[in-house]
Length: 465
Image (tube, rainbow, N blue to C red; front, top):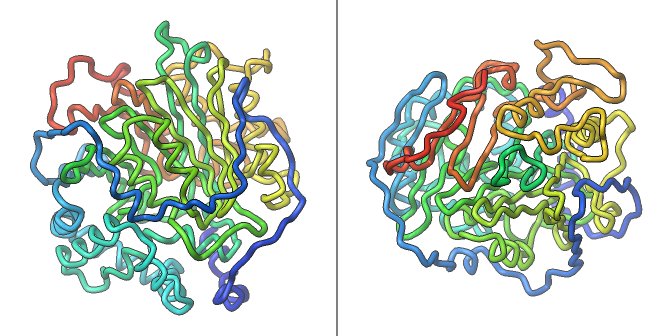
């Protein structure tokens, strides 16, 4: 599907060179996806916090980790440990993963992904990225290019990947509009203590390099909070991660029919800031709501220690948020469901993947869906069962096990990585590797162990087959 979608670049690329879109459309559908939630919409973010301001936030606690930069292979997953300034971590990344980065360059140059850097440069997005990216992203990309010494792995390529959601949003192709997430806590989960669970499928296309080189990246930036992300060699701006302070975060791409911009802060890069610099959800929400954003995103944030979560639906200048209410359940795919955000979304066909997946998540998670809901029973295996679900609620059919990206169910939508987080415990379960990814074993990881700390309570279960 990636080949087909990138062919669409050619007739539309000329339309984005000077794009500055701001309209007030009325389209979309309204679906309530968070029960008993407190909904808030802020329609003007004129008091913006820029990237430099966000980087100035300093955690109160001094964190120490007991590891040295290195890499290790566990099964089909590479674990990469980085430590120091962003530039130093980039150097380490480049040196330790030079062989994998060379393979990445080979893949990119032989596929339509190579157009990303070319078009980003041609239409000024790379220049934008060098001005508007967070310093931590710029420095790590610079260090990686220096450390790898791989022909073709350059600062520009690293930045093109780290700024890609902004560029792709302006193409309006929906190339990355393929992810599912949910939060469950309190009465929604099976455990007596109500510990929060955060489930997430990262869906893209059949990008063999990402499937062949799943990488857990452990970072401890100097003076900041250590954190762990799931991605691939060369991945600087994270799409999903968990930190030592009990925060997990992940993003789903969305599409707006007008409210995007080329001036502001990259939302995907902001997740690195959340993980490196924030230890509570109130401060995170204040930061998010003050940002001058550029793209259309759905952002899910969990604070395990507080047992709280929030689902943001974002455009450049508007947002809606749904905090977990008393019911303790929420879910999101790739369209706007908040009543104040629907008008900023695009219209979808009735059988669009995002609508199918949202409908199925409703069946599985909504306490009012008496015949199908897992509400009140959700634990790690049940969370995995949601991410593995192949049922199409519109057709009543279960998709074949070998289907990878048929746009017809939660598990058959191009899943690259499938993750269950328990941020309070500091545990996560990851399925990666050969497709269909959700049918692979979900192996457990402890961030305490990854940071070199004692782990008094190892993850339970150890794995989910």
